[in-house]
Amino acid sequence: MVRCWWLAGLLVACAAAEPPLRWEPRCRQQLRHLQDGAGIAARQPPRLEGRWVSTGCEVRPGPEFLTRSYLFYANRLFKAFQFYYRDPACRQPAYSLVIKGKLRLRQPSWITRGATEADYHLHKVGIVFHSQKAMREVASWVNQSSGVGCGGFLPPGRAWAPGALYELLSAKGERDCTAALGFAMHELSLVRVETRYQPLAQPQQSGSRRVEELYLGDIHTEWVERLHYRPTGYQRPMQSAVHHVHPCPACGIIYRADEHHPPILPVRAQLPMQLSGSWVSTHCEVRPAVLFLTRYFIFHGNNHSWEGYYYHYSDPLCKQPTFTIYAAGHYTQGIPSSKVRGGTELAFKVTQARVTPMDQVTVMMLNSSEPGSCGLTSSWRAGLEQDITPTNGCLALGIKLPHTEYELFKTEQDMEERSLLYIGERPTDGSSPDSPAKRPTSYQAPLIRCAGASEEFSNYLSLKYVGKKGANGNEALKPLPVAFLLFIALLFLRWD
Image (cartoon, rainbow, N blue to C red; front, top):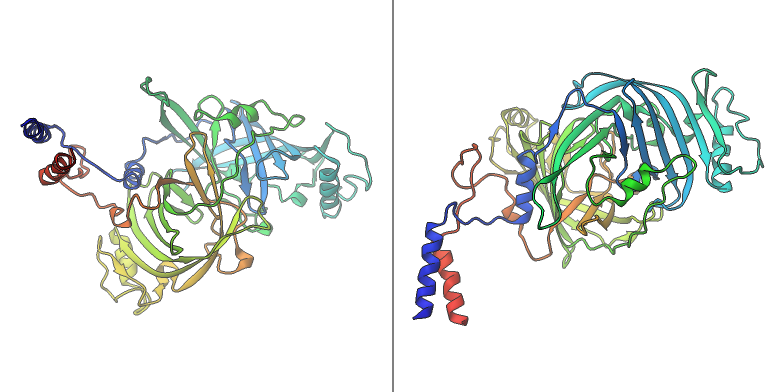
């Protein structure tokens, strides 16, 4: 009798609940959060005044391991520190650069939506060595360069003097020896500042904390191109020294550093490569050649197969979808990278793919493609998925099937102990890493694990909203049916 009253009470409560009980997988929830803008605001022109710092050890193509600390003044002058290391944990400093100059913001970029173009002028660049070995290496690079006055930058065999500052560039002296280091500050020619709010971590606290992120232009993946490349994408963002995520031990350490006292980041445990499960983007990503996208991957460790969803957009907040690509295939057992310490090398074979155009511009492009090069000729419709495996890919979208990509992966945990997955940075020229020689030496923005190996399934991940539209114009999730609730209740009664 008691059980019957308990069941009746449950059904009445569920039926009367307002709003209806809803459930959504975490991966889809994260993608919806990004598609809804993730509460991000971006002011144009951006406000740069103040100190901006790296939030961890960064990896640039090469590879180069570094941290950054940039200070922008109200009079448009800036002073930037770049600290370079021998290791991927940023604990073994090699040398530090001190960069002084002037920056002038111009107009909104007509190439990269949401960004502001800028001009910069360097006044001075100095270098401080943190070991005899670093001094010897850099001196050999500079002495062999063709820059005016660089041949005798440092005489061979000169003893290391801790704390000594050597001039690499001087606007007044017309000396520039920075090319030997592959150094350029073209990252300052493309600028974007985003503001978002981070929920307070403590359960007893309510509200949120302001976070400001500075996105500067990306670094070309080819060393010989980086001195001339004008960015169209971004590198890993820096954060305001005042308004940054919490916790962030690296932020304070980098903020207090200077060229004589380079930051040495805390020791972090190295995680074994555990790909199995589901991984999703943490924010709207930007790639060179103006691609805005979010990514979702599922790795099946039992048979080394993978699935990937690439949601493309026309805007920097990922609100206006253009097309979605689904790809699948298999991957090899990973081996430690001999070139990028801390990374794992894998090979991914792509054997099938499907495309869903989401706007009329993409539909027209696909329907005008050469017959037999991208799905069924003139059959594309907005919102309808089509398999492009029979046509060996889609020439219009640069997809070739089957093909193999040589990848670089890394996993780690953030300060909230969430698992992060870093996948190799795509070549800046838009090509594919289809040979071992083109394997990445740096990483894209991290993905966050949103489900374990057996928690969620790929068919949940269509971003087409289900249910009726809510007051905000978005479609709401369907409430769980009463029959399902009754089934759950009966299970409880059965095992009570």
